[in-house]
Picture (cartoon, rainbow, N blue to C red):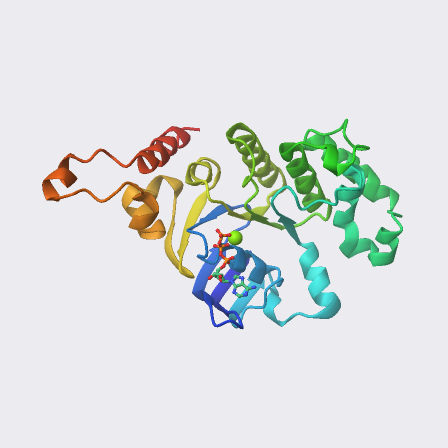
Length: 281
Ligand SMILES: Nc1ncnc2c1ncn2[C@@H]1O[C@H](COP(=O)(O)OP(=O)(O)OP(=O)(O)O)[C@@H](O)[C@H]1O
Ligand SMILES: [Mg+2]
């Protein structure tokens, strides 16, 4: 349902953030996009909804070529893509309900939404969604009175209010504790299954990606270096994606003999064991 072919992005600064990306996402597939900081994950997601203009290639969502759209056609296409950001992307001074209803902006127009007049059906649907994401009692709370996990649930409800076909999710768990992170990922996963939504989820936590995604794509320096099943992502592949230096934070051993006896680098061991634990759902 989503196809990127030959997609490239060069920022005006000269940074080539994406190089010749080929990617097809079938309906209903949850894909995790992993890779080191600066690999181009956010750029890729933003090229899809055209918050960033790709400088090369084609991006098709079903029958629509997204790279050629402008004006109201672009706004229309964006409605079929729900964005979920880190949980702080809410309007603090607005209530939970108002934040969710702001997901209707593309439908009701700026002024109507500015005046906070929403169609009755939208309000009913927002209620339903808040119930589904586990926040039926918080509708009148101000967003700044919520915990990080609750805020992310509001963000999810807001993205779903526009009945998207595709979810674009940028680091949904970046500042959440491990348990809340798993709950949020599970919720996104379940909602995708219920609504046959495809999703691209940028995520730094490899174990979470393996636990909740159908497919993992690894980006490195703007190129896809891995595209496969969560179970196919082994330590060698992680090194290809993240590079040796990401893992190796212990001081260099003095000589070769010492290298043989060197204990496994703790951060690396921790990541690997959490992956092994996480791989069992
Ligand atoms: N607005 C911009 N102007 C110029 N260069 C940019 C811009 N946004 C990103 N870049 C560059 O593009 C490359 C990819 O950045 P991007 O934000 O897509 O990476 P990322 O994989 O999302 O990283 P992170 O994990 O840190 O969020 C980086 O080299 C970055 O410096
Ligand atoms: Mg990013």
